[in-house]
Picture (cartoon, rainbow, N blue to C red):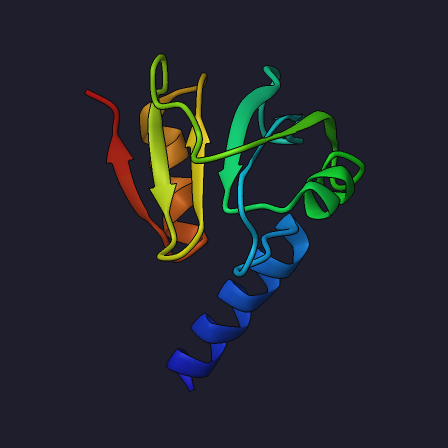
Length: 112
């Protein structure tokens, strides 16, 4: 039962974030969270141009811009690696972001 709940949470997280597993490119956007006073600058990969446009209009997100290739890691705080999908955070508290990554069943990788 615990595995089923975990799978459902991961599936919901991926669906609500607009991640498309077969997409190419990346999507830079700003996410405003109810849990933080500071908007997060995030890059998500892989993401198609169409999914990036939708991502920029959902869940407090704005300023979405699609680009080719992977997300830049220069200046990043860290990355939430969810297997085929990755979220690169450019600002915010690494410890708090790591906790959020754990909720998405991801592995937090602190930038060096």
